[in-house]
Length: 286
Ligand SMILES: Nc1ncnc2c1ncn2[C@@H]1O[C@H](COP(=O)(O)OP(=O)(O)OP(=O)(O)O)[C@@H](O)[C@H]1O
Ligand SMILES: Cc1ncc(CO)c(N)n1
View (tube, rainbow, N blue to C red):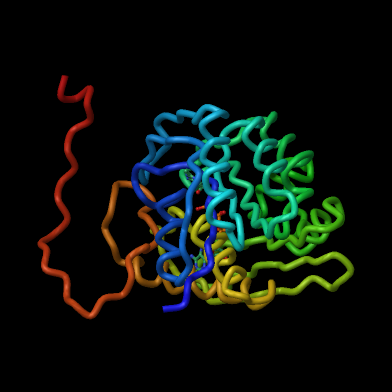
């Protein structure tokens, strides 16, 4: 067997397994690359909300980074939730010069804020400038550009403006199906000195979309590690997330926005009964 390339995910955990490290590592496994992981934050999170966040101490993040970077030589590094400005600055210092996919995680699908103003500033000053490609959604691009959150700037222009601001990294602005669930989703790929490229794919009508951003950015990193150029990797990542959304479309997992599928396809039929009822919360038991 040929040794697979290594992709390093630097991200937070999601107890519910939809987003974060769970999405990253399962995507790497499915796409045939070896996943290493540096955990930056532990979240108590489910399909309805983020209930608690514990930032991993900087020294422990540094030790994890040292362990992986010195030993495994990742082909690509991908960042997700970073938690604090000092972690973003550390990652910027340690990963500059490596192929680096930065998914600027500012908010969960459930609405929770995952990055305060100091971390947003650290993204701008320390991490985005050393990225190879940045994958914001429209709301994240607006925040990074310092625009009002509810502005009406078209997605194409947001991508172009962010690429112009960053002067080097490419921007792959992801577009969910907000406007019309039956329509096409369009991601915009803006690269310095080139016309922006619209990458359209069919929208899947589903509310099981928790973790799409992480899955998409991880697939992008995996395809880049496998040797695709940026455009091919972007097309592949959109196709991957769309296929996984189609798999989980009718799932009944959780009380909120269920996870995008991270299962691999199997020829063996499932042999389990209906989903179990949830166990009461700790305070309901006490
Ligand atoms: N319902 C859908 N059908 C098809 N593709 C989708 C759908 N929702 C999201 N996608 C695709 O998934 C990728 C990432 O989506 P999106 O921009 O919604 O991520 P995000 O808002 O960062 O997600 P999250 O908040 O879960 O991290 C994009 O390529 C987008 O087009
Ligand atoms: C840990 C984690 N990373 C990223 C996201 C964004 O979807 C999330 N909700 N949770």
